[in-house]
Image (cartoon, rainbow, N blue to C red):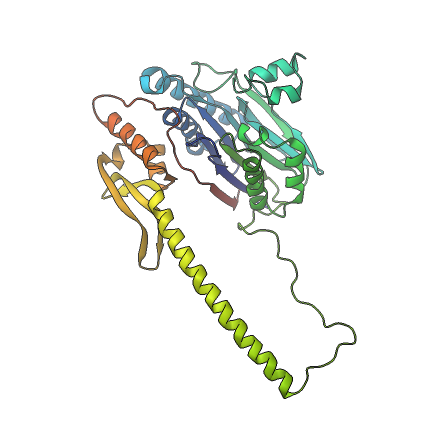
Length: 394
């Protein structure tokens, strides 16, 4: 049976930009968490997953080689572009093979395995507090609230050479694997993660539930999860929730049959009144939803393409029949052909963001097309909404 998988990502409730990136391209899966500000961190994480997607490694050696190569590319950009100085990214990647899964890992994103209902962390965090915990200087509970918990000791793009953790685990029937950024485990304790994974009927529901739990826990960081089952034991799902509860009921024991015409007339009159009430409620809901939709389309923006040029649109990238829910706000002189492949892909995804963030990203693209490189502006937004992917395949 082919592998099943699901991914989910969210900006969170505090940050304006999403510097996480994910890859689910069986047999390769990965999560990357960028650093250095939105116009640097998201570039680094995007470069990491794009490199793996393009390389399509089929062996553990090819996986490690692709990661080392993209480390050099990120380092070159970080040292050669003042606007991207200090950029880097974590990366936790997995290659599902026959009978085993190989992981290559750097940073503080994590890999977990759910086997027999029990959750186990497979990777080791490359962070200051994790090293203190391993030396016995700090408890795991204290590490969660330590003021230096965000300091990582290894990442892609920081040095020309990178030290990677590489290991393999044997597969057992029904194994489920979770890759995640620190935005999940810093907000959701492992027992709660384990409970969600055990209680979800498919991977899409589980991924969405994990992100929702992180948001409920505070959503202080971007949160991204990738779930996969190499043997397809758990279905990917179609985005629907668990099956609806059974509806309907049986007549009470000893109940009587319907009465005569008079009783039926009373029932029919009541049903007519109920129908009019329902119609009025439905009309009110339509009016409210229409107003809410109109208001929403005035509050959100996204980068897209107009006549082959990067442009800012106001509204939602949707059409309801012949009606478009967005309009062109500003067309730039930046050609899509002048962007890096992963930047062009991001523009074509039409991700929702704020006007300020869209203008800042557009200015960055414009500056790079001109004589001078654009400078990084910390915490510029990419989008405030979730992204989802599910599927099967090997």
